[in-house]
Length: 129
Image (cartoon, rainbow, N blue to C red):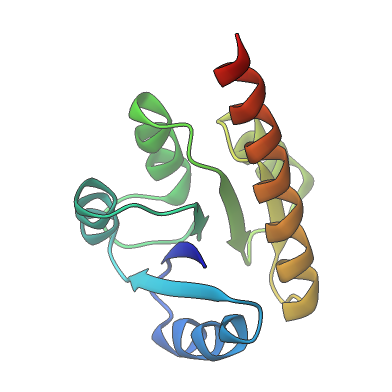
C-alpha cells in the first residue's frame, strides 16, 4: 500500500480523496497546515506528497522548496492556481507533476501511478550504481 500525504487546507477534499484512494490501495493522511505536514513527514514514511499552493502559514511553493532541501519524495501540486506561470514555477521548484483544480479524481490517480513508477525506476537506478 502506498502512503500519500495531502497538504491542503480543504478538509472536505481530504475526506473525499481518502475514500476514493482506498479503492486504488492508497492510504491518505492529511495536514491542513504546512507545519503539520512538515511534522508528519519527519515522523512517518510517505511515498508521495500532494500539495496545494494557497495555504495558511506559507504558500505551497515555499513548502515545496522546504521539502526539496531534505527529501526527494515525489510531489504533485494540486491547486486552483492553474496559470501557466504557476505551473512552471511549481515544476521548476521541484514538483514532479502539477494538476489544476477542478480535476478529475481518476486523472489524479493516473498521475500518482506515473510519478510513483518513475520514482521507483530512479531509485532502482541509483541503488544499482
